[in-house]
Image (cartoon, rainbow over all chains, first blue to last red; front, side, top):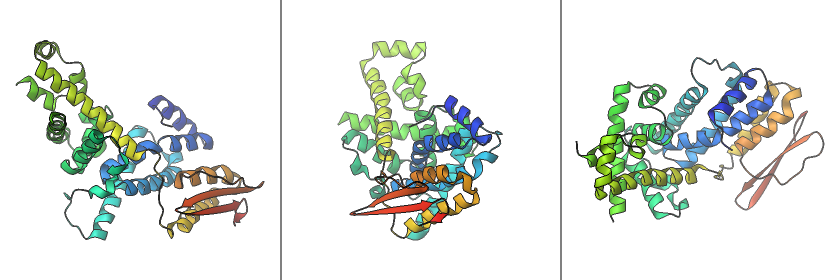
Length: 183
Length: 131
C-alpha cells in the first residue's frame, strides 16, 4: 500500500492527536517509499531493509511530537537519509573502505531479481555510474517529481549545486539509456 | 543548443511535453523523436527496476537479531503503557518482520511468525509480558 500526499496529511493530523490506528496506517503506508529511498542512498538492498526498520521505530517514537515546520515528506526523507548514511558508513567501516566516493558492491543490489535485461542494466548503471548524491537527485526530481530547489532543500545543499549535480547525472544516465537502446 | 543536447539535460516533464520550438523540431526530425522516446522509456524502465528491487522483499534477518529486535519491540510497548500494547505490538512486529503469520494466537496473546530459511520461529507475547 502506498499513500498519496492528501492521505498522508489526513493520517498525520489524526496521528498527532493520538490516533494510533492512523499512526499505524501512516507508518505502514510509507514503508515502501522508505525502503526505496534508503536503497537509492545505500545501494544495498539488505541495508535498505535495515534502515526501514530503524525508521519505523523512529517514527513510532517521534510522530506524535512532529511539528509541521516542514512537510511530513520532507521530514521523513531527512530521517531516512540520515539513517541510510549511517548504514553506509557502518558498512564501509566493516569493509575498511575509507573513500566517500566508493561505489556500491553490485552484488548487494540483487540485480538478479530483475528478469527484464534492459531494466536490470539501467538499475546497475544507476548505481555504478552515479554518486549517491546524483542518485538522490535523479530519484527525487526525475522520478518523484520534486523541483530541483525542493530536492536541494531536502538533501541540504545549495540549489545551484543541486542543479549542477543533476545536469551531470542526467547526461550520464541518459547517454547510457541511448547506448543501451542503440545496441 | 542542438535538440539532442537539450534532451540530455532537460526536465523530464519538458521532454514529455516540449516547448513549441522543440516540438516543431521533433515533428520534423525522426532521430530526435527516437532519442526522446528512448529517454522517456529509459526512465520508466529504471523506475520499474527500482520498484522490483524494493517491493515485498523478504528480509533474511541474521539469527542473533531476532531476539534483539523482538526485545526492542517489547521495550517500546512497555514504555507506551499496557492498554495500548496489542495493536502497537502487532503493527510494529509486522513492520519489523514483514513475513506471513500462520498462527492464530489465543485470546490475550500476540504471535509473530518468522520464516528463517527452513525454520519457522513463533514469537508469542501476552498482555502481561513475553512468552
